[in-house]
Image (cartoon, rainbow, N blue to C red; front, top):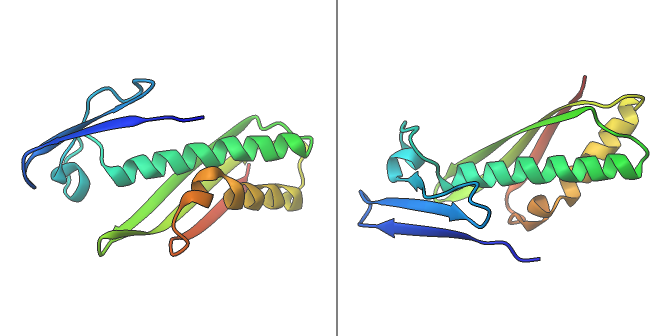
Length: 138
């Protein structure tokens, strides 16, 4: 499998860019230094996209791990906070809330840890990036 996205940047630091994904989920989505480092909310930024990828990937992997253990989630909600500073991502923190009928707290935690450690995005992040998680069974 191979997926792609295109990014175009015009100008210097004060310039602007746009990102389009293969599926057009993002279609010429704007990004600027203000959407990355400032308070602008009229576009996206690379760290936000990494956070979205990690949250989505974890949620899918968690569903697979749960299924293999004999459980089906009614709902998995995952928020990912990316910490960026000194020119690099240093941390990715997952906050998970899930409703899974019939699962014990111990099995839930085991499956969540498995998904955190084995989702493709977790495995793709640089080993110097701390990946942490708070998981809550509702």
